[in-house]
Image (cartoon, rainbow, N blue to C red; front, side, top):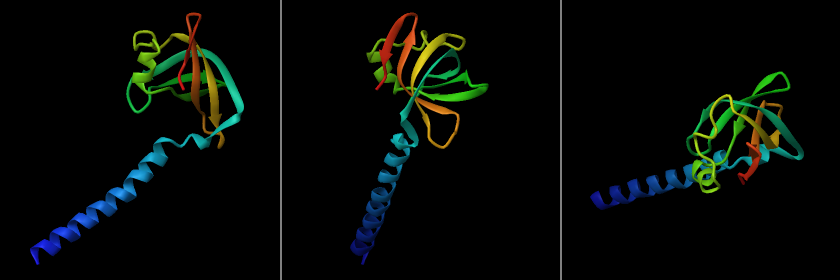
Amino acid sequence: MIALEHEEDAMRRSLLVATLIPAAALAHHGWSTYDPDKPVSVTSKLSEVSWSNPHATAKVAYQRRTWDVVLAPVARMETRGLTPAMLKSGKPVTLEGQVRKDGTPEMKIDRLTLDGRTYELR
């Protein structure tokens, strides 16, 4: 009887994990919400820079609105030469990427130009 209860608990845990992992992966890698057919290039000053995972983020003023900016994972940016000290609030940058299809003021950045140097983020 005890062995059967342990097996049932193990099956429930496995089912729960099998359900949650794909949902988390879809939530994290939902790049289909961005429009690759309408690339954007924005030169603006960064604000509210967050150097954290799963992706660094920032905000920029664009089209008279404040936009959320989704950058790359910090390990990737550091490997490509970007550091937190380089991406401080108030720093002017050029961002190239895509905006969300649904009109939410958010952009996913593929390329960032800072102090005359371009960094590939994807």
